[in-house]
Image (tube, rainbow over all chains, first blue to last red):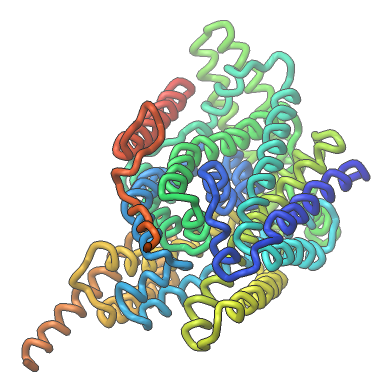
Length: 565
Length: 49
């Protein structure tokens, strides 16, 4: 990066943070600090909900997911529109009627204090972990590619998000998010534009889709039935519905964003905005990944996109092996390029048999190329070099190599803006839940005291997240790691909330013990079975177990009561 | 004189959208939009299989 890049980065990141502090300078009481001034309109709510969910991981890692796996990941979001409709129609009016600060307050009203503390505790535990990943994930990729120190990148981005969240609370988070999202979209659009312009002049959009389709990158919807496949239409519709219901309906980082609406209408419209925009937005990010894949069929891709890890491994005794694998990779790639050229040429002339022959040759070369890449990845790991999944580096490498100065700064600013927006929302939610559901429950003081306490809790969670990020270590693709952690907890949390909304006969003690046992079973299943059951299904399993156990315990308690009386 | 009671927020509250006066209409539109997007993705996949 050069000075114009740093200028764009500093102006956009610090400028937005300062704006957030200025915009919320008058919010000096508990209500406005935790819920905002109550005048937020639907476009701001809609963008805020979107920005909270779409972290830096979404924009850094998802194009890599599209590059490797194609559009199939989109199915993860198929349940979201339906979940948002249920929340807008049923859950949101209840939250607004009760005027709650946190979603878990409702559990206290419906059940009892211990269930409220359990719901809030599960949220704090998993969101506390998630907040660390939100900082760590972009920091590891950016620091690796830019040559920055990882610890300083984590501390720097963590402190900026903490500073304006402490200062302005919910309003600062909501109002900075719209500008942060503007930077993100500007950056992504610019990258897409450059990517299209970098394709060879004789390659049309039709050719891009032909090549992407030929390598199965456009297979967006898979109707097959089974628990083993990560992304299918059914896992997305059912598992994704449960995940989205829990995330949007019972995760305070989201609930806090939409309960602050000026009216029920504004909050509902904000949710419907996301119900419509979420899938198309993810589609275009994944499509960008497919375009990257096609771009690297005409340009020469590196064996591994994580250049730093590659260079470090080359300096170890694995160097000669890697050089040999690089030679195999390049030979396979050259062969594939020639086959693709024949394939497109035959396609332009309508020669179907020649198309099939060239396609088969390209697929065979692609298989050899992929094998060389896999072997190289393993060799780098065997050399003791730690790195996250190589797909996380595909997009950032393209940005650093292909974009002009100034635009590089804009894209790096976009990643930081996305990281800060979701981080700030998480800190805001963690602080609200700690203050309202735990601290206010234990320490009886006035609102002025709780206002100060909530600011201190924001600082506390900011440091916890930074500390966790400094010690984190991930091997999964980052976007999947985030969803896996969420899926382990969200099912049970959703079960508690569904029991509260729809199972009127289930009382506090039954749901409390049902939820604890269900969470323990989900942990056991995940650690014993792992990916035998793909992670989206843990949302369904956790929720179903929680409800079944709660109903069972309630039946036993009712029977005992009958016998006693 | 007591302050007027705050208006109860209900399902019947107006959407403020001329094309969709009820919330049920808005929800139906969202589901229809989802169906169209999924269909388009399936067609894209089939066109370039």
